[in-house]
Image (cartoon, rainbow, N blue to C red):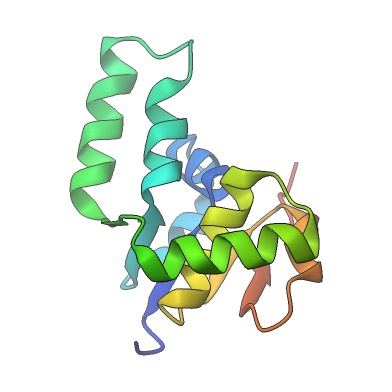
Length: 125
């Protein structure tokens, strides 16, 4: 994987979809990856209406969604035992690690994961 690739956590997807300009500028020209877990979390939001679903479909079509394979499952199990993160967060982190992708997130819990190429996003209010 090259320096023009980035993995987004669910929270950064939400910021981007809500119009975060700093994040949009940062992602310009990047190949963007997300976990299937993020896709599920985005579509499962109870407040989604038809317009939001359309926006989500366009977003999903513009990124690469990584499924859970054996390597990610194994990494998730080991990381869950070691770091005691929530399972969705652990799957997301294991996916970024398995594909050697830097991950951008606002979740400080990811800081404890050794070997994760982490970009901690500070949301500007």
